[in-house]
Amino acid sequence: MVRVAVFDLDGTLADTGADLIAAANVALGAPLLDPLRDRATAFAGGRAMLRAGLGPGREDEVERLYPVLLDAYAQALAVETRLYDGAEAALDRLEAEGWRLAICTNKPEGLARSLLDALGVLGRFPVLLGADTLAWKKPDPRHLLEAVTRSGGTRARAALVGDTVTDREAARAAFVPCVLVGFGPGEVASLEAEAVIGHFDELPAVLERLVPGA
Image 1 (spheres, helix red, strand yellow):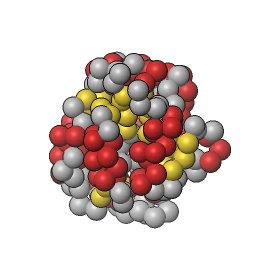
Image 2 (cartoon, one colour):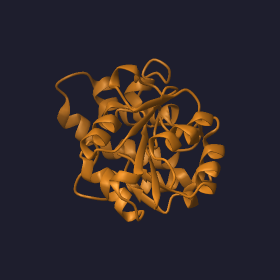
Image 3 (cartoon, rainbow, N blue to C red):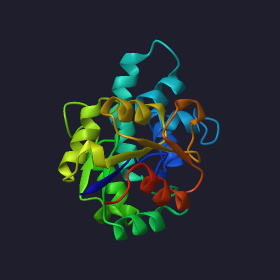
């Protein structure tokens, strides 16, 4: 039976923080966010970065600047962004073992496609669902389960690889095992995932344990 490995993108496959922060600072009109200090905020989404820069009670301004941030990011989304060490080798091994690979991200689909293309791995993911692909997004489990279905799989033969509580909640609600990366921006030890990896070299064996081959 088909096995499906669904990946989050930002903070999971690729370290996108610096380019996200740069785009937020363009929208804010000043370097209010720091790539190191605000790295975790970057992976919480564009609006979260704008709120961090503007301060509380500025939701109208957040909404006004959000399209500016997206445009700035689209123009420079792979300046500093790189795949995490070992990611491509892990994808090679999973493909060789028959896994189908998919992306389920809360990044807008168009930006996700552009980024994966710039990183040279778009063709590895026949199924890619972004924040605006469907009427819902993570942590709604339907976002994840649709990625599995479009890949030709079932929840019983799928796993999600992510890096945040959003991924953990989506997987839990979908009754799909979750592997969290420990090298991303957030603290994951307390999220009680089925597994946490410290390097992509560990991923194929972990997925084999969680979803054994026939």
